Length: 171
Image (cartoon, rainbow, N blue to C red; front, side, top):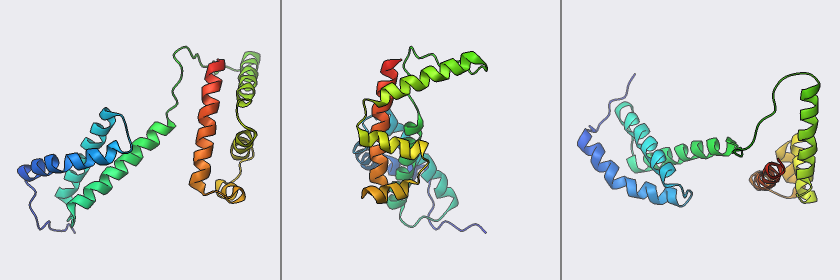
């Protein structure tokens, strides 16, 4: 059964709340992001979700709820951005065909990847091999290395970033 909302949120209230609370969200996001357009997008999406929820649910603390929604939208944005790989303009991915040409192209890519890995420190190479080739559990690896899982993820992210940069330089 739908809960009755004890407060009526009309358009005037929503507009006042938006203009009063927007600077606080901007300051919060500027701490984590430098891209002004991304900050505006995150704020817009956050308020859209908050105003949609206002019509459906009873919200006890609107400010805290808005900050939590904004944090969630930010985490979604960061996850999407982290997954996106920026390919150089001149990069031409290999054809997905089969046969000897594909094997040769794959072998060339493996050779370039191994050459790019030489720029990494021995610990970075070992970490990448253990996570991806050895399929080791990150929690166990972090414990062995005396790190937290998030600390291990940071080290892995930095190693992969360095590897990506060198790999694309070799292309």
